[in-house]
Length: 136
Image 1 (cartoon, one colour):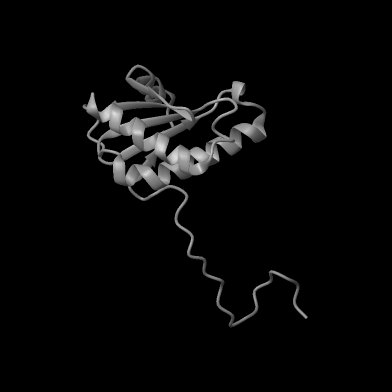
Image 2 (cartoon, rainbow, N blue to C red):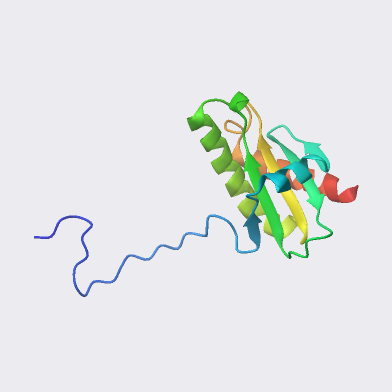
């Protein structure tokens, strides 16, 4: 008898059809300088989060870049991580269709809103914020 989860010779691994955590056209912001540049650019607040958007001019990197942040005002580590997970999923679903190539976006979680707001409302918030930012 084999223990649960052990590979049995000749058996095929289980294949899941889950989408990637971040879309292939999205790149994650990791450097502090990129977050600071986005903070000096356009902002659009929504009920669920704050969006900062910046058109890149000088670096020549193609694609959409996105960053996520939640301050300690959002709550403890569990609450912040829950809020960021929701923001990542919203960005994965909306930005490939509504975002623009050559732009950086930063989504900032809000206390008592990001983790509790209905998911469909968060998606609508991001679409609306993107329309307003790109209209300017």
